[in-house]
Length: 386
Image 1: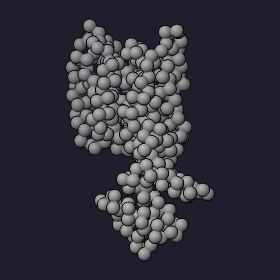
Image 2 (image 1 turned 135 degrees about the vertical axis):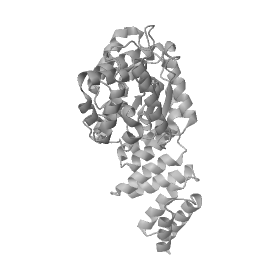
Image 3 (image 1 turned 90 degrees about the vertical axis):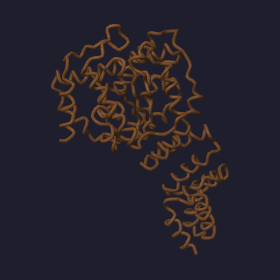
Image 4 (image 1 turned 135 degrees about the horizontal axis):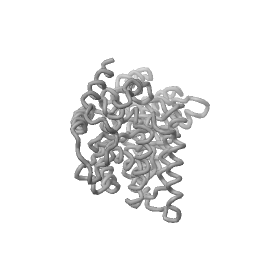
């Protein structure tokens, strides 16, 4: 009820001109209107809440990389009116959304799934178009025109997976963009304008439909009826077909760069960190895929082998413990400084009744992670072994 009241007040504050037809910020006819200014001010307040929430993924090098790609695809004439800023949120579900003032938030989940820079450019161009074409203010005005406030509020409070505390942190504008999305027409406009920006920037537009495959994969893995990223958007098949129609129109002109290796190196840390989030959420198939992907980029990082080993250990079926032990040992051999693999080995040795080996592994873990939050838990195992 409180959230409904807040949304009602926000919409009342945005009750200026009731037309939903507005030129994009790149147009000579662009005028920054009063209700739009209020929407931007409210957006800045919500962005400050996000910055203080602890939900931002802190990696300055990654953020600089994402912003450099944004500069490649953004319309040059829009920069003075909407200076884009890209941020990353710690959330393993596929999602991205834009505030009307050009601040774009990308979940670690979708960064970890994408394959190359061309797919990233497609995502950024799509979200940029929401801002340059003023979709937020157009839709808020449209909600007033069409009395759609009740349906929107129900959607804002819907029980989609992966939301967690996002609705509290994001506020009404961010929640609307992140969870409810935009209307079908506006999403289609963002797709079609965005893909033209991708082509203009020199990226291969054939990667664009693959973005929807990542979303489809997540839907199937989590048995969702609609993907988090496109909760009220056109169906994935329809949007993918729109991209394919555009590609057919290009004919022999289709092509461009993907910058796959650069992208993989830049997002490698996100992949493994997001895999840990997936693991804690019990999404083992997703964790395994990410860990294997990470190891193709950084084969000498023990975290990838540890995660694969921990998945096998927790399954505990025939042959799984032997596989887990092998993976933990591989983790130790490639990265002796990584502590968690020693803990995994200790738990397996303990279960096998090999107490002296378990104690040795547990003590190695505690020595390498002296401030481990589960220290007392591991010390109990050591005491049992003795």
